[in-house]
Length: 298
Image 1 (cartoon, rainbow, N blue to C red):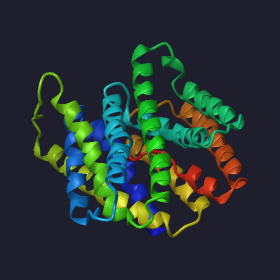
Image 2 (image 1 turned 90 degrees about the vertical axis):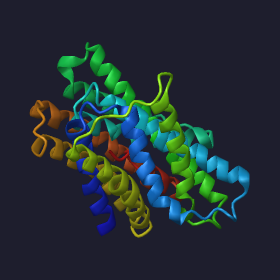
Image 3 (image 1 turned 90 degrees about the horizontal axis):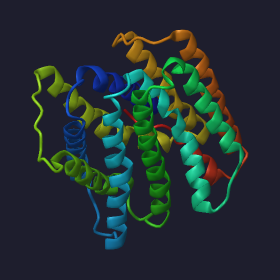
Image 4 (image 1 turned 60 degrees about the horizontal axis):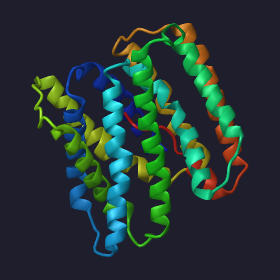
């Protein structure tokens, strides 16, 4: 459990660092730098000799979506939203996990629409004064795209691992980051070529922290911790980083928010998450474990 708590605290600071210390840095360059550092962490652990080529390329594709597209969308959203808002809006990810799991299994639970509506209501309360703002909806849409990418990756990776049990997680994670880095590099290079950001010392240290610690070491700690707790505890820690990240952004990075609306909206979103976990607890174990996995890291 200590691994999950440590990782939640690490990720809680990520949102504020990106939105404040790295404000103005090209999001494509930031995604490429962070994923390159994370890939370097996992490269020495890569063991793919026993993987079929098709399985290896599938892992690359999963990483391209789960981490590559996810980070591109997430980092772009900082141009439109404060970091506490981005952390708050990742609350939708467990719902997307549940819906995508149903889609893969070709079944449908209407109660997930209720959860989604509760989460949307919570969002509307928090951002009541900006619901007509195109800027808000652009940022919100980018966060949701990021949530869907991360949710899809979780489900796809779980299904992929079911047929590649002979490979260890740490031995194949480098493949996921290879796919993610390819997407991030494509976004950074773009039609106009790479745009190297001008960084001061504090910003360079922040990127190293995000790439090596928050993406590299933290993902490994999370995977180890997830194997040592039950699905209920895993769900709690997945959702714990959301209020932690919001609190860090407001207290440490001194972002401004309408606190009464934030608390009311948060309560509605927590109700959606509670409904999600209640439904998951009443279904088969495999489904419970899948649905318990929550929002993406910062």
